[in-house]
Length: 247
Length: 345
Image (cartoon, rainbow over all chains, first blue to last red; front, side):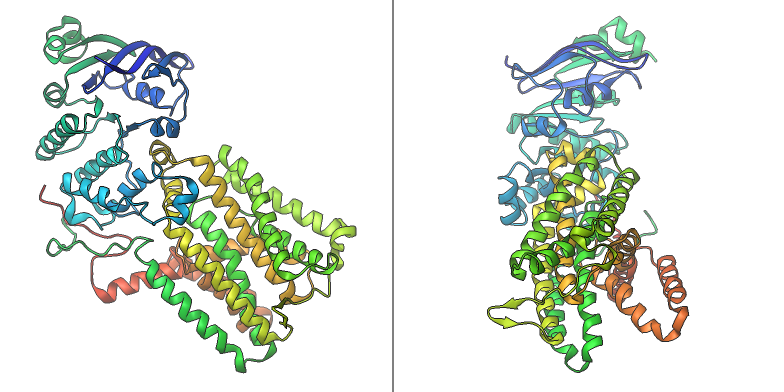
């Protein structure tokens, strides 16, 4: 199986705090990898180190075997890696459609062609397709800031897919989302994984969500990788039960 | 969200975003330009001068509205950039013997370039620290204008700045020059209208609202920050290039730090981020004080009181107030707090 992302011995220290310590794992093409672990175990810091929001203290990140450690977030995005954040990150002043166009526009043409080209950068159709897919059709022209929390969460996820990325890192997509919408989101992620062949890495606290969505799970505790395996393997691992599931 | 009025049917509401309003902006600009072409016919020399000054100031405010209102970069050097443009044009057209048009272009390019260079600190320092950097720059420019007599004439300034000649037509008369100012203002306003509607405008707004998320969407924060700053500065340069032949004599005082604060006030009072805001803001900042002059020494106090009252009543400026009024008239759920009914997902 082809490896898309490779994390090798990644560490991030904030002064004396070792937020992430010697983390290694691989993400295979077409899989949905879950990352679970208690609050503060370094999951989001790990994402930030992989995607350039933070510079790792040591270790390497490879994309298709190429060293991409320390690249900026925009460079990572240009290489087809996109993400969502734990907290909502839509642009409240823009409409739903404008949010989606914004999420894709920098992948179209050059700076100059964007200035003199069409104002939607030719992305209206793609944005509307995404709006339809996430069932936000009645809200296409509504201001994103006025949407409910769950709807904004869906928009946030949709934005990560606008540029047709090959790898998407989702940081707690299910956080604060009601059960119906959660099922909805899960089905959509599965469909996109199957049809578009996108590879996902998902940080999540909701166990049912992770166990029913992911093909493999990385369990983290206190900044380190505790176990890696299929959902069933992980569930049966005594160390995991001790550190996380048991509580 | 139970207190929100119902959102009828499943017809998408017209978005009240910056982009949807732009067609109204275009019509307003074109109609206003036609009106302003004819209006000063009976106003006499001084009235026409005030109108022209209003438009020239509005150009500088437009630039700052891009930098601050749209991209969220706090600059306190807009008047200094206007000074660079004014002095460059004055020197090029008097000592340099150059025509106005090339001098205008050079003033714009020069302020664009200086804006690019000054924009670099904006990449490292955020919020009020950038304001301090531009504050220092503003003071520096003022000192250069005042002290480098060999170039700028010092406190005596530069005089006999010629008015432009266009296609063999001399624009000496106040009416002819006013119409020229109207045309240049319209062209610059349309260019900005285009820019703000383009993907660049969307990226500038993303820069203001959430740079971290913007970067994760592949938006090149460095390029867009520098461009927002440089284009905003170039508009001040263009304004200066029109200001010099308008007043025909320039000295350092209109380009001091206090003038930069005044331009900032016009952005906020007009409605920060609104495309027509700069015209309203400049109207308030340039024309209102002229009318208040009849009150003698009281006029600055009155002006300050009006601005304070306005900002308490409407922090979004006059354009924000107009939008609220318009929303109330249409009684539709729209505007800054567009309520959206909880969907049935």
